[in-house]
Image 1: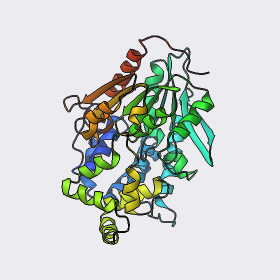
Image 2: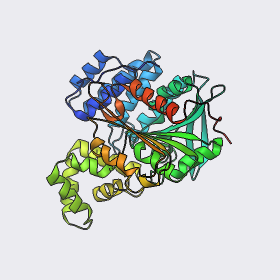
Image 3: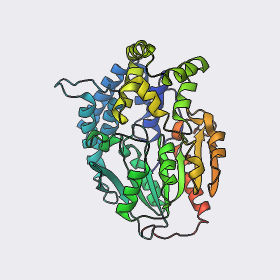
Image 4: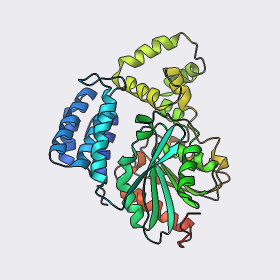
Length: 391
């Protein structure tokens, strides 16, 4: 796979700009087209319309991957309660259209297999590849509101390096959320262990992307079959990272409010938050993704659980911590490294602007991040061929 290098100013909106760079970095859309969309998309409604038009055009041309990415882009910023012309939830309609094109594209790769693993009241979707004579096992999952199909372009990289590779979704993500209606809880060890059990995996490298920087360490803390953990990127304190970006005064206000869920100011605050499309969207995402979250107070208290403060000392594996100097979550980089007091080894990699990899999950230079991960795996396993990783 060839990934584009560079992080560009496609949009003045920080969130939109990151998403547009994601599409460019992964090679699914051209720079000029993204520049045009970024210039025109001055609000979220326009963003959705522009990507719907681009998706329809790509679908008509038979470009299933680009169509899937465009429908995913529209799906990403759609409000959780928005309806389409037929009265159906827009997010569900866009998700199914997106999946139809992802399925059409990835079905053309016989080396990538797909299976649904029974789990609780639903199932876990897993894409996997088993090259001949694998030198190790890699398991990867996403984070907050990811679709595993968005990461499948990374699978051939690891498979090409000789690794048996498994990419899966858990509760609160993609198919498990949209079709099985299973929401996310902090106890990620249960779904991860189900994947390891099903494929009889051992001696595993687990990679958690984005919020997976909390989820993967959480799973590793309670499953010794995971011998190496990659935080891609770190999530030392999800709540703290978000509130500190608001400024000290607002951060203290939210600290006070979350500690007082019955405070009458919550009614006023909820109304103010819902007046803004972005914060209304953000909260709606949280209500849809997390278990038993229906109010702003419940949302902010929920994300407090997603931190690696308590679980870091439980990790006894080799740990790789990735972060970028311009990443929203790297304000706790040094704290995260120091918290891994019982790990077999701790390696930190802070990517810089000069490397074009300073943003979240190294969008701008994915190739460098992947090379860093693969080289680290080789180093901590002494470059020796391991077992197949299956019992």
